[in-house]
Image (cartoon, rainbow, N blue to C red; front, side):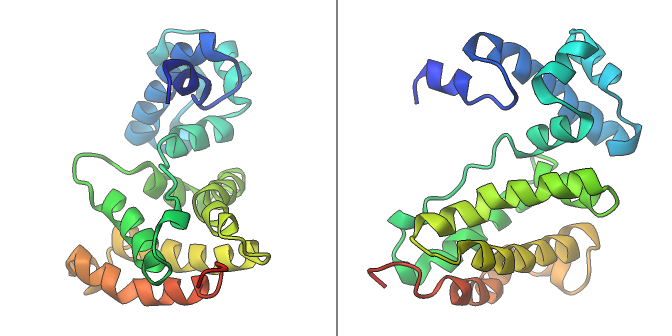
Length: 200
C-alpha cells in the first residue's frame, strides 16, 4: 500500500490531506474512550486532546457513535479467507480474533466496542456494520449467496466467546489457554463456512 493509499484509507470522511488530522482525532478518541468510557466521553474532550475544533471532529466522523466505531475498528485487518485452504478457514478466522483479544500490550478496541454496544443502540448498529466488514465481507468473498446469514451465525459465535471470556470473565473459559479456545471454537465456525467455495 502506498503512502497515498494509506492516507486515503484513514477512517472518517475527507481526502488524503486530512488523513493526519483524522488519525490524531482517532488517537485522542481511543485515549478518551479508554479512560472515561463511552457515556462520559465528549466530542469536545476528544477535540481538545487532539488539538482541533470540535466541529472538525463532527465533520470527519458525524457523531460520537461514528467516532467511537472508527476508533474501535480502524485496525480490523480483515483476513482474506480465499488464500486459506478450505478445511483451515474456520481455525484461521477464530485465531485471528483470539490473537487480537489476547494481546496484552493493548486494550482491544473491539472488546470496548462490544462492551459499549450492549447498552447503546447507536453503537450496537455500528458494531453490526463492523462485523459485516470483519466477518460477512470475507465470507461473501468466497462466493456465498447466503453470506449475511452465515456471517451472522459466525458473529454470534465469536461475540459470545468475547463476551464470556474477556468481559464477563466466566470460568473456566477465561482461564483456558488461547490455543485450547481456538481448538474448541474453530470447528463450529468451520461448519458455518463449509461448502462456500467452488473448490471445496
